[in-house]
Image (cartoon, rainbow, N blue to C red; front, top):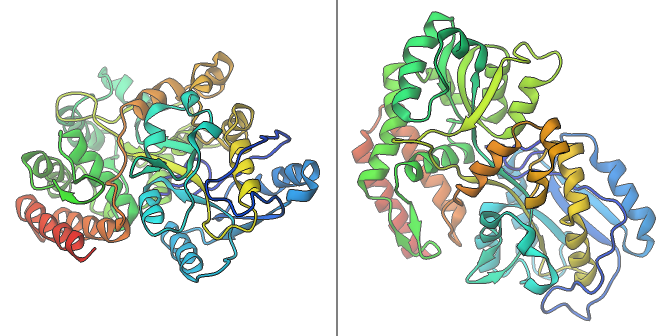
Length: 424
């Protein structure tokens, strides 16, 4: 999943939208003197091209608290690696504010790399409820949701209309349409993000959650994946490749490759983030005007998406933690969140924006996205999330390529996750 990228990818989206809102009195817990001053914000590479000019707006109105943007690599894994290297260094690192993937909050908090925040400094009641959970660890707030995301099922509306069938609500309907309708129109059936990287962790977790299962419990201390639901979810993905309605080429897809396949008119169905809907519907796209979006299907009805997006956190080594927290409050204000959507096509965290008629006219997928976010679940919480994700990717990829049965894959994953928990 491209959750560390702009335009909603992702998994962690890397956008910072800045104008002139001042949030007075916002301070990180334990702030050293509550000082104010210049800041450095670390984020993944800005793929939208609008970040720099908006930072100029903040810097004009906050001359004593100017923000320097540090763009890390486009890859989520590389971004995380550079952040953690800096945070592990001891002393004062380069970064004051971190735009982190929602799945990293527990790991960064448990390691002592980010500072807890006072809940009463941020109007969390105005946020979509599930996103707040991604910013907490051990019942404390360690970050503030900045951008959210949920997976959607994009489909070729023109093809299904021609066939006289509605978009699928269940796995059985998805499988049937991908297997029978797609070939009639020269299309591949279904794809997600199936290369062994973070995107596969997301797709696998969605399949397990949609079947009623889970992967970890108790902040990563309890392994729960060895279940009939997990076998059903992973079996669904493996069966798709085996039976051909998931093309083998999709085993090399990340967000952008899968988006391009759909946008080029080669796929009937695609699981991706909302940015893919925006791109496929844009002027000049070969499938513009032919795209629909619905919640992800599950075994018996709508399934469960994994929450994507990013949270803003204050580094434990921040030079000016009060300014850092003020910046976070500013970026998550309703006015700035509106710009997150209108200028970056990124899903905001503020509930009211999903009910705005003007925004719905401009972004017709918003009601579907809101329903998906409200029903979504976070990736497994663990202070060793990087190891957990690597294990999920490797095991599920082996199941999808036919190297292990889904049953054997689930047993192996349970053993590997238990080992990770014990090593921790």
